[in-house]
Image (cartoon, rainbow, N blue to C red):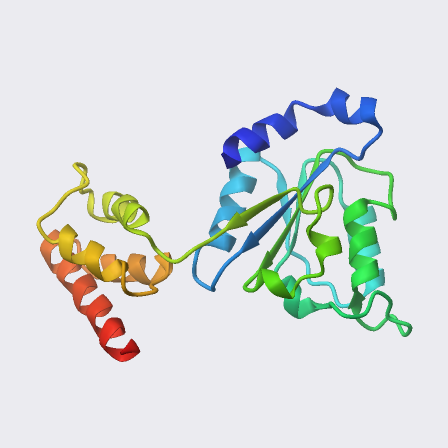
Length: 218
């Protein structure tokens, strides 16, 4: 779904020109820490061969400088947007913080007409904290939920890290049952799988890890 959306965006230069809109696309990645938001951003930049700009911004003027100084084929990233923006203040009279109004202007491209083919990505652990004005289409066009590790995601990780190609192993049933009960991030699961190149040892270690999390949550 994401690849299709990115490819559609890349091929619509004349469309954006015809409808009078800035050639940009906004993505919101939301979900708990460790679910792969930063990794997905890096993968998007690699796939598109776009420049990735992760500069820290402290105030509205920083946003303006960033937008003006960024050329075409760029991805602008605002990580943990719920923590970095004054979400309840549309204006910051002293200009010492990034205000919601400043951010909306930034995303709308009102501070600069230079540069095309740009992507804006915002990440958050808690989508509910964000102002609806930020979430509407035209700003954050596509919302992608980065969830805890599902059994399907685990099988992909097992294939990548342990080369289990048939997507099945006698221990998989136990792992599936535990993943249905435990909130484990893909990063945590991957960390356990990396501890040994021996399939049985790695999977047993993951089972022990998930069982420990389950016992702790009781």
